Image (tube, rainbow, N blue to C red; front, side, top):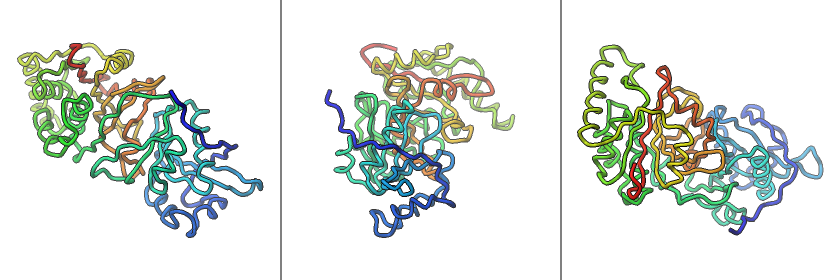
Length: 363
């Protein structure tokens, strides 16, 4: 396998980025005569990036009091990547410093939003263009530099269009990735149709989602893993609201039995998830967003690949007010320990997953 070219790495300075008190060394790199002009600091400060640990990775010049390059870098908590929002000044030097920072931390990848770079520049520095999703918020382009070698073909990225259709979207993207659904069929009609078949109003609980996937693609070997027999995702609702939704979940289990959709009462372990993905399967996994985004909301993500120490997922939702974009959410590496913790939901301490095996191997 040919190695990617590496930009020159120099001794870097890493400092937190505070919008109200930027370091004076930054001003000469982000002036109106520089690439991007005033749009760069305006973009940096237009959102509250504090949840994603914004910091500057800078390269000092011969005079240590000056910088020749700097990059604004962020990342979702509990993940294994860094994201370059913009690189300023000597761009190869800035990118090289970010790559070296990521390697020292043992991270799986570096991403780069395409606000002020081009495909030619990013490719020359060893990055691969990401396929830009139609209609997603954020930059018109994005790039990835994998620090662990190659990985299987990426699924298409599709951003959910509502606050409650994450489960349906992960299933649709999984089927598109498996070749069972054409990419152009990933649209809002398909999203809402599958959600309507799976919903517990408005969320999709594991059994209902698994049954809907099995009915939509009868040849797909689907297994639901849910290590509780109690209704789930109802604790935030008033008691009267819980009752009829619990009844719907009982009906989902009856539907699973009638349709031949297996419901395994075991907790699907992280080694089992990795093994399923390595065999070419997909796992729709229910997680809390407390780690990734800072608020404890149940959410479905798609697990579709593995790298050393991490599972590669696609998240159909990006939190734009925090500077989070599709570049963060697509091909997102989550360390095993982080994924293990965020996918055990409180207060019942359960894990919900839908495993879709390759058609030739069975569930």
